[in-house]
Amino acid sequence: MAHWVLHVDLDQFIAAVEVLRRPELRGRPVVVGGDGDPAKRGVVSTASYEARAFGVHSGLPLRTAYRRCPDAVFLPVDRDVYEAASATVMAALAEFDAILEVFGWDEAFLAVDTDDPEALARQIQDRVRAAARLECTVGIGENKLQAKLAAGFGKPAGVFRLTGETWDQVLGDRPPDALWGIGSKTAKRLAALGITTVRDLAGTDPRVLATHLGPTIGPWLVQTAHGLDPSPVHSAPYVPRSRGREVTFQQDLSDWEQVRREVARLAAQVAAEIASEQRPAVRVVVKVRYAPFFTHTHGRPLAAATWDAGPIERAALAALDQFTQRGPVRLLGVRAELTR
Image (cartoon, rainbow, N blue to C red; front, side, top):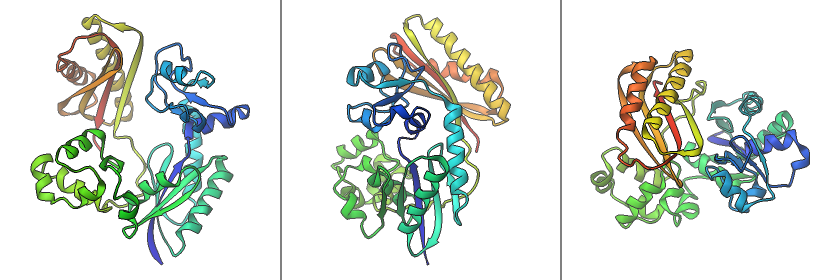
């Protein structure tokens, strides 16, 4: 039997859970975010496929989502319900003879030995549907990278296999940021070097990229462009690598002394949360979203791993001091990056 990695991705997870609670919403555009009031400031957490057809997506301001799709049903975020639904799905996946790696609320990897991964993928879909009444897409690959990308091609509720043999045919002409882990900023840096496709990136000398993007990132980018991923599927319990708090203000903050007080308050909340888990932080990151919608972040390492509020607050304020722009602020966030 061959060894395969399967990536299970729950389709429009949060919106799908809300539709289960309100069956009358099936087939209608549904947007979940903030407290569910598009007249207030907030961002979209997820949108149903019907809402996505109007250009509504995660991270979009709720007010913009309303302008694009005024007939959508707007609902508040309900974390407890989503966590319960996710737990049901992961328990169903744990029943398979596979190594299971939970990858958040709505994603998981399974490492399996089978001669028919498509048949197993369909069994997984049936099991998830029976346990949670939710649909999922299953990507199949020879490693986690291939399986993760394959799921994107299989959506919604499909099964797709991506291997080293089909890699170039499927992805060769696509831009580098089509690959898992490569964002738009890196894609722009690659474009400046004349690298505009996955095929271009795969054909680049790793030593050349190392000089431009660093000795670790450069070679990793070329490796990824070849569809290679050495990271194993492991069954260790999923543990978030960071904890954070954000607040969106209904009126912009123009007084930066008030901004500092809000950052200190958020830092104290984050410190209390990680102290209750006894997971020390090693770095603190502050996010500032200016009006109208420009977002920047700055981070500050801690001298020693800690969950004490004092050092975390001081690091957050030091990170805030790195922001040179003092314009009106619509959102603030503080995130603690934790030890493993």
